[in-house]
Image 1 (cartoon, rainbow, N blue to C red):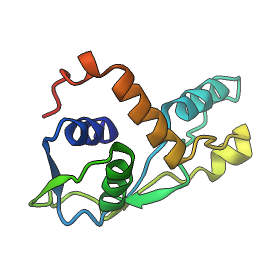
Image 2 (cartoon, rainbow, N blue to C red):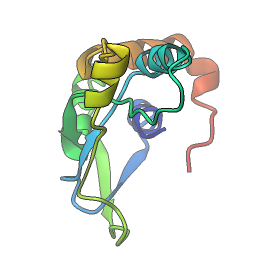
Image 3 (cartoon, rainbow, N blue to C red):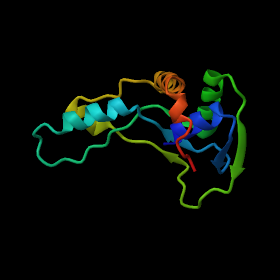
Image 4 (cartoon, one colour):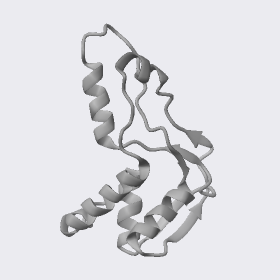
Length: 133
């Protein structure tokens, strides 16, 4: 949801609220990669817990900069108090998915951002109306 919210807020000139200083690291994954991994995991393997996620990490500030570049805008950022339970870094360890499912995320962060921005503008008439508190 953060990707969509940030894209909408930037495209519509809204202020982007970032908790903390924006230097938190996050791993993002393209939805089609997750869906493909889920389908692969449905094959009869027995009961296994398998993490699916992206292999690239980025800070929230870096993510916003990437979106600014694609949208051709300067973000209006409001840094707000960080939630004390917010992790400094968060991403998935996908070693087991590689080993058991032969699964890898195929869509890079940059490719996913390009697709998201294109989708947003193709659907802006209704996507801009989605509430993003």
